[in-house]
Picture (cartoon, rainbow, N blue to C red):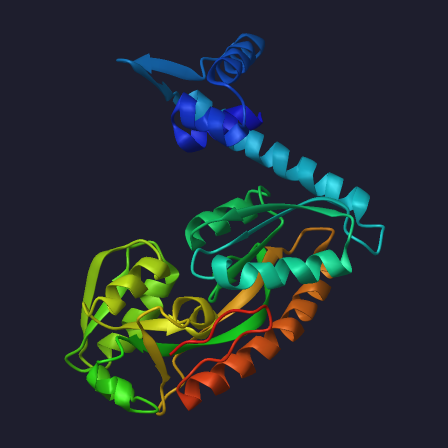
Length: 315
């Protein structure tokens, strides 16, 4: 059933096999055995490739439900303990994973030392889909989470900073106003990143020029800023890494409005381990609160100081 769901999701034998960590012949053999067992054609050869038949799509949806119920049964079996054990599948959005996931994982390991962490990095839409399909246990993502099957707790308030090259006209100011963005070229991430939509909301209120130049990550966007191509709005959580000494960019806080995003730990409300995830979220929020106050204060003074883990300061 897992192979069938993977094939339905990816529509390609090779990609499905890679997602399941098996060889293509292994996956193909299992799909053929499932077809013989059920007496239903799951795939159809078209040219040099294959497609999943309508009956295969229907079977995949039923398989997803069975796998979800099976995972919840296993969770229920472990939920009698005050500690999580076994695999914990966790994912984070790409604009949070490099900057906060290490701290999140440290909290999980301290509270539940026997857990086996399985990590992934997914855009918001894919993360929500994986959570609701029980392919993930918890996710770190930006609000809002418009999904009835999911619960969440906000763990970090992540203000935006204006990132620019050191010689930019606004770099001489200790703080900036949103009106200062009028006429500026603001670099955006590519479609699919929730951070893109959040930055667009700020820019369109003041008449900034929003430009997408193929930025697939915050690191890439910041390299473009350092090259003088434009400015960008950088989450506070990313500043200790992307605006570190030698990065070629400086950051300034906004003085007139609180432009920010909220990051939340999210899980299925039907999960038997939901109380443990809620407890984890509260512990994570307490740990990240120190990062929030430290980086925000440093940005307001015009320079970021080294983080607790030795991250170098920004100029």
